[in-house]
Length: 300
Picture 1 (cartoon, rainbow, N blue to C red):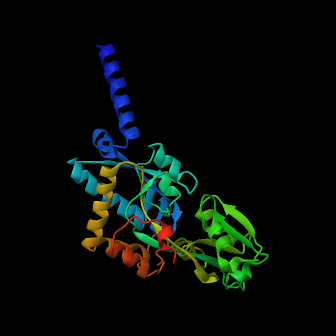
Picture 2: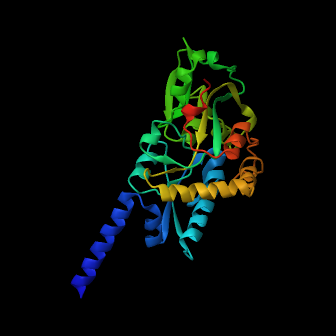
Picture 3: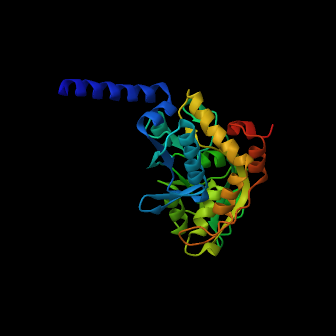
């Protein structure tokens, strides 16, 4: 009897592994009764932690709603959501290897990443900007000459800055933070003169700082980037389920209410507003749901 049980267990494990490898995430979720949601710890209003394993934010809560819709679609009475914190460096490998089923953080959808992973419909369109101390005298890219500029390991923001036509002849030192909170600390502590990152991440970290009035977001918009949930490639059924939930949330107005909750109302832990009204670019993405990469947003 024990041999039969062992053989059954080995077969079940192999089947589960095969489901993950063949990209049938819905079957994997139904068989296991659980799903892994990739979340961020310091990605502004899109996703952050309150500590103690509690993760919140616009994309975090939207991801939870997506998974609730999928639970209903699969006819499950319950679904265990396992929260997996990810970083800019490890988020793509963790999706690829099956550790994370759905990553809803602050990931830019671009052509290079589309070779490795798939993206859901765009739910936030970001503008990359520069945060500085209000007393710094820095107001534009040209003012960064000879300065130290912080960004987060695994992101594309400084490359974007270097490619900007206004950055020609500008010489600055790049310093790296391990995550967005660490990068902001580099600015806060004076180890960096500027922090280049997604505007809402900058705004979110400023709002949670000891003295928000000490900082400002300045300069030209460096790039416009579609932010979307990330999932494994070649799994059309799971992608459709995710996209269908997003489109429902857009259509019934619940996504707009969720945006207002996390960007226009006081949020924990400090009960301070980020105060970032929904942009025209994000409204346009919701009006015509799509999964276009950032290269399609570049003005021709």
